[in-house]
Length: 113
Length: 112
Image (cartoon, rainbow over all chains, first blue to last red; front, side):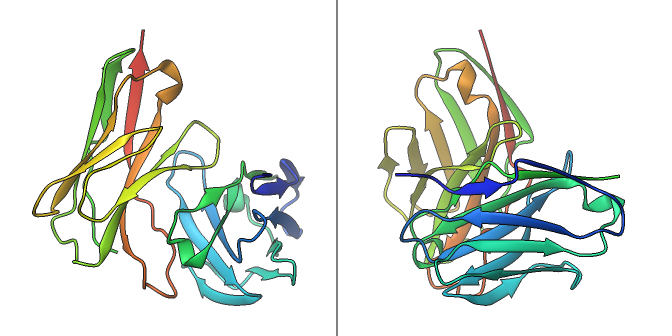
C-alpha cells in the first residue's frame, strides 16, 4: 500500500511569489491535514480537509489556503511568500478524523529567498 | 486537547529499554493518549495509542497509570534508528474540527 505522497520534495521560490504543494493521501483516507515545521520549531497545524471541505484551520493568515479534490488529494497554496514561510510542510491523512492515527508524508521543503 | 508534559531530552544505550514518560494530569475520560515520533527531517510516525488499558504492538508498549494522569512509552530494545523526537498527545475521538496538536516532545538519543 502506497503511503502519503507529497510533491515536490524541495521547492525554492522568491519572496512575493506563490507556492503550490501537493499531497496524495493513502487510498481510502478522506481527511487530509497540513502542518508547517519551521527550522528548529515544532509542528504547527495549518489546515484540515475532509470530504472536499475545509473543516478547520490553524492560526495562519489567509494567504495560506488550499483545497481537496474529489479523489481526496489536496493542494496547499501559499501566496505572497515571505522569508519566514521557509519550512518543511507536512501532509497527513487519516480515516475518521484520526481515530486510528495519522499517516504523514515525507514533506516538502520550501525555501523562500 | 489536554496539556501534556514531557522531559526535553533523554539518553539511552543501544539494546536497553527506553522508557519515555508523559504527564497528562488534566486528561478527560474520553481522551486517548497517542504517541508519535519524528526522525530528523522526516514526517512524524504513528507509534501507538490507548485509552486506559496497556497496549503493545510491534513497535512499542504503552503503559497508562490507573488514574490515567500519566503514561510511559516503552521501546524494549532501543536501536540507533530509534533516535528521534517523541511526542505524547491526548485527544478524544469526537473532537470534530480539531487536528492533532504537537508539543515540543522528548528528544531521545540512543548511543552505542
